[in-house]
Length: 126
Image (tube, rainbow, N blue to C red; front, side, top):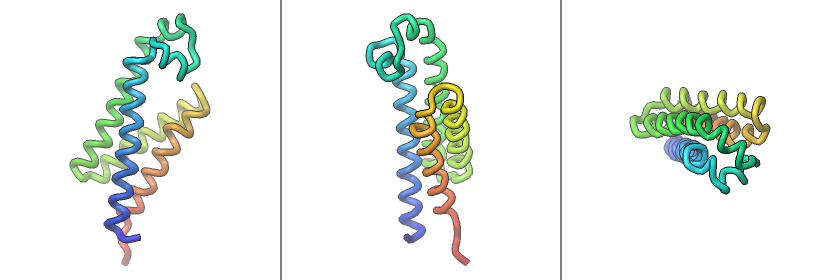
């Protein structure tokens, strides 16, 4: 695959991860204490009501991850993309270990794939 195509593919992967985190923001900030959020996160009304403020804070952080990834793309800063993808991966690994193992698949794995593509797109042949 040519370097140009690899850059396009890595950019699409970064956009996908950013979109996931924008979706997480929406779920956690606006739909946590709503039937949709309760169904997705397997919570009772009491559980969602008691944790809504914490979830909104968590959603805000997911928004910062999305914003950082988009900033890295727009500014064409590979180092920024790598930094925010590493943040996504660390958050996904920690969340999978402490909250719900499926977080490894929904957050960490897409971050790893995007990071590998960003790194591959930057390698130069001698």
